[in-house]
Image (cartoon, helix red, strand yellow):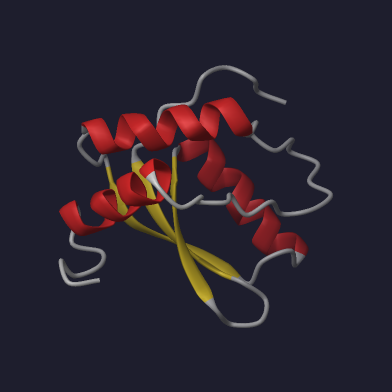
Length: 108
């Protein structure tokens, strides 16, 4: 398990096993765990939508939240953990990141 502070610089689209999709910020290490989760059947698919996103203040807010509340999953995954995005500062920052990187429209 890697408990070092993670820098998030990738936007992924993750497809759950029920076919629904969601977005997540990650890095190369975390993307590798998502790929492994797909191989093991915990999720259906992971796609990288954006690489090397700008490290804005919104990214810092979400990055702090992830580092304070989650750890990088071990390579021998037993489950897939979907990160919560609580209402308020964290969700607002996350949505701002998606809009700034043209993943969702400004109206969403």
